Amino acid sequence: MATAVALTVGAAAPTASAVDVGSLDSPRHTAFYTPPADVAAAAERNGDLLRHEPMRVAAGLPGLPVPPVAERIMYRSTGAAGTPVAVTGTLLQSPRPWTGRGTRPLAAVAPGTQGQGDLCAPSRGFENLLSIQTAPPSLGAGYEILQAGVLLDAGFDVVVTDLEGLGTPGDHTYVDRASSAYSTLDAARAALRIPGSRLAPDTPVVFSGYSQGGSAAAAAAEEAARYASELNAVGAAASAPPADLVAVLDRIDGSLIVGALAYTVNSLKVGNPEVGPEFDRLLNDRGRELLEVARHQCIADSILTFGLRETPAFLADGRRASEVIRENPVIMAALDRQRIGRIAPSVPVRVQGNLHDDAVPYGQVEQLARDWCDLGATVEFVTDPTPPILPRSVINHLAPMPLHVLDVQRYLVDRVNGAPAPNTCGVAPPPR
Image (cartoon, rainbow, N blue to C red):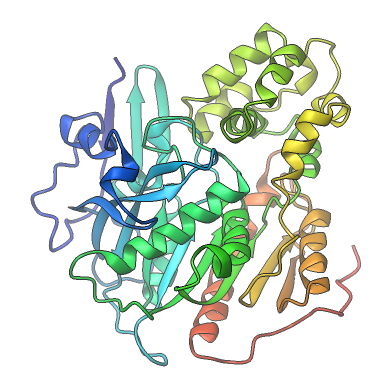
């Protein structure tokens, strides 16, 4: 049996004094993350709460005088397979006053790559800066505390979805376009419906995320008008989003985060069961083992286990994954369904691409911005020019995130305040 412990720093939030935050596999935690047997019967609408409880938040939220009041939430959403699922997350109330226009806004934040194991759920990371599992060994880190903290400091209340399958049973549907959009939108709905919420039904809502979270925020911006039209959505920030998974596949093969390819394959099987037999045929025994091991890992574990490995070692014919996948029409069709950029967002979007990103290629981010511009959306395309640093180390993917969090904050505050949205559509990006 796995044993998980938590290293927690910081004081309890005012309403969370009764919360046990010791062992992450304690009966209290296990019970919370176990959904009802029939989610559809337990919650009538997407975004309806299934349960919620106060929780403690670790120290480290930038700029805040005291930790925010926090709730761990479970809500109904729509999964990658198109059926009702339970998704967990965290609702954080800002201790800062909102000094902008109108009522206090809500930011729905989608997390970057955490991994695929339940230990990696961001709601656990907010509670404990480090979550350590001893059997099998695993390490989860609550780095999304940075994005949330900057938005809380501006006066936003923040809801961070765990996304489908992180914390809850079943495979995490990593970078699944529809599931990610629905989990993010339904997290916003749940935050507005929580009993005693200080947020109103017409509260301004923005979406934000980096990397995997950037694609979720982008997909939420595309789906908001159709899936959650009652939300008062006013803006989004999609930073370093993997909008074209085939292009990303080429870039991360042989990088430190090559294990994310296994997350993607496991995820594709959930919403596209027809790809399972195709991958079984293409993989060798080591490849099949990779998929199984990665299902239970956080990203740090996958880096230590598989970092810098190249995909020919895991494929039956010894070629690269990008080659064999491009030749497989079943897998290519499933990947094509994940493509972001074919629906115009209903809100202005800040899109950030990192010129020398060694995980999420700049070109496919630039293409996303162009696709949205062609559809008539309002897009500010921003390029981070950080020069190349240790290729394949993903430094050029990770470093721009903290460099731009305040720019994202200002952009989203401006959307709530009704400032004219910057629009770079029709403006050539900087030379590479």
